[in-house]
Image (cartoon, rainbow, N blue to C red):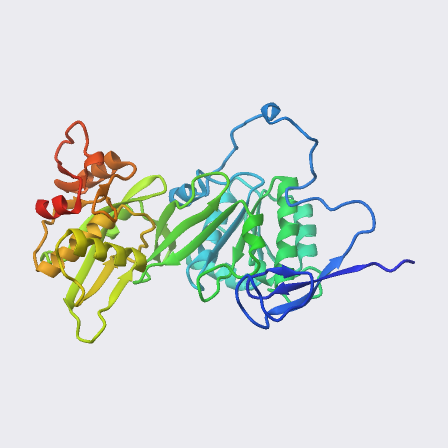
Amino acid sequence: MAKVKVKTGYVCSDCGATYPKWQGHCSACDAWSTIKEVRLGAEPRAGRRDGFAGATSAVTLLGEVSCTEEARFSSGSEEFDRVLGGGFVPGSVILIGGDPGAGKSTILLQTMCHAASSKEVLYVSGEESLQQIAGRARRLQLPLDRVKMLAESSVERVLEAAESERPEVVVIDSIQVMQSAGIDAAPGGVSQVRESAAAFTCYAKTSGVVLIMVGHVTKDQSLAGPMTLSHMVDTQVMLSSTEDARYRLMRTTKNRFGPVNELGVFAMTERGLREVKNPSAIFLSRTENAAPGSLISVLWEGTRPLLVEIQSLVVSAQYGSPRRLGIGLDQNRIAMILAVITKHGGLVLSDQDVFVNVVGGIRVLETSADLAVALAIVSSFRNSVLPQDLLVFGEVGLSGEIRPVSNGESRLKEGVKHGFTRAIVPKGNAPKKEIAGMKVVGVNSLAEALDAI
């Protein structure tokens, strides 16, 4: 009998980059002594291996492809559905990651218990025992009669069970503990994670099963394992907690079936994760006594506006080099805004420590909060209190101009719902028709915005 040729490769254990031969330095992540030789599995002598999406199809003209709406079904949570783009899509692969204790297993157990009322569900646990999961389900008072459980870490045995049970939704908790018999590597290694995820993805695409994989994160909050894992899946979701640990923020970083950067907010309770229907309310818990440096801005998260409080503190530098610290904001963005204030606002901040914070643990990923950050810094520097009913948003340019942002009118209407009566916005976002209950001031430059306050 002819010997089966074994494929080997050299893979960086930190970032998953592959190389044709061993070398001491990984040029992808700049790490040293992380490239290891791994066994990739037996090479087939005949035929071909199907791709991640199953068997390849015949060549077809793009115009002849039928565009049918994906038949989605609900997860049982409006916030989870929002993050997914409207619910689960049959045949999709979802990767959910987050810190230990963020609630990944909890929200998936709640979701599967809800889905089991109308769908066949298989929950595969490779980390926790079935007794632990059952105990958590009883504490959360979830229905236990229809969720099928399997404690297994072998990819082959999991796929055999799935072929036998014919589920419509499969949860793999987690992909880092799964191992394939054809890979000579420890669970959690680059090759094991890649090949295990590839086998599960191919199964989901060919059978139309919704596959949800739980992924671990590293100390820098990125998903552990090879970068190939993120490319395989259809949707990548990250679950994180706020600074006070009372709330969980769920955000999509990749979604082939909906918008990205959609945000879902949950509250951690004794009964598990409960969705927050009005997330702006939890980020607007301001004190009764107004203080300098506090201002409300409106972010646009996915498909909805979100009101957040921007706080700033400006004090004289006690040491030689002044500090610039931002929590929830890009440090480089803060430095740019300070330079614009000095150049076009006439304020000298070179001898001041500047601290900026976004209340509630939310992270600002867009430029619409620039004007609010600038005015909050000026308010703290001048020790002047801004009105409690004032709303501010807009992008600040290097020449001091205030640029318009998207969905300006929707942001203003969201402010009216929460009792705000005044707003300073870019001239391009000023509504043509007056908004009832809202006095809007449109500005073209930072100097005009400073005059308005």
